[in-house]
Length: 351
Ligand code: NAD
Image 1 (spheres, rainbow, N blue to C red):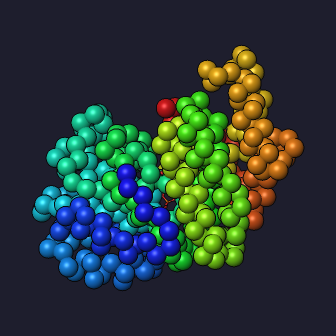
Image 2: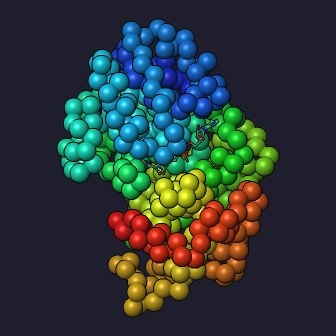
Image 3: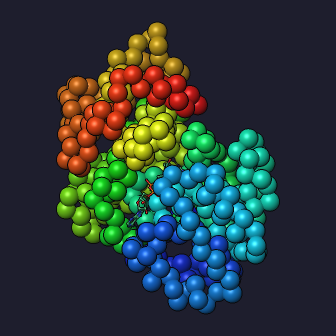
């Protein structure tokens, strides 16, 4: 994947298109962000110079099969050199799935990702600093409220353009939810049993940037904090691209589909308790092949980065960070009662 990163770098898209001989594109554009981020205005001269451009914006947060089917139907009416996404994780995942299912029914792709084919270019331009989807080979898809994570090498974009100027229009609440996603992805990647030396480097760099900039980008955003969070999210994506995510993500999906909690916030609600849980691991319940000592070292490393003496202090750090970002820390604030915990447990993504 070619990575183009830095404020203002959206203007590199002209050279990228020329380099890849792109004369026609199917643009998956977030219905709000495409205009409010300034991307629409900045891309206008480039897009009007192409032979064919079709814009698809008929979707809401969290990609579902109905939106992807609509996009596939529209894309099937012409031939394109590239699918380009401008938006958050939702737009990027829709673009990934459209580009990889042009000739295969979506239901088959979901059932057997090995059927995925992609013969055209895929370019991702994130307008949120959260998911890092531009740097992963996964796509999330909700089918009848049930979350599927589809994995295939061809879901990794050929090019990503991470331009933090596109974050200027992000409302504080979205900056909080998406920033929490980046923070949690880095932490989960660190303690994932699939982590490697390489994923740990990405995760540590991403975590360092998230810790230093999350509260700032929510409450007092400036170009430096925006660029830092854009990089933090991108690094967290590179980390989970290797290690995958863990329990907090697995538990979060039903919170989003059943209770409408934004993705990153849903993940962050259980990260403190999961840290305490993982810190208490013993030989008897440790599934990391590197053993309890390895897990303990990782937890200590995370505590050190959070400047916390104990797992309880770290859990408190998360509560304070959520509060400082304007988010409640209690499930009941989102309409989740004690009785409904069974529903969340039953809908947890076991993979
Ligand atoms: P999102 O794309 O759903 O966007 C959230 C809201 O922010 C939307 O209302 C959107 O219009 C608005 N928005 C986005 N950018 C904006 C901007 N610059 N200015 C103003 N408004 C803007 O949110 P997200 O958190 O980026 O993506 C969440 C989705 O990504 C979830 O479905 C999640 O499961 C998925 N995800 C995918 C991966 C992956 O690797 N494929 C990783 C993590 C998360």
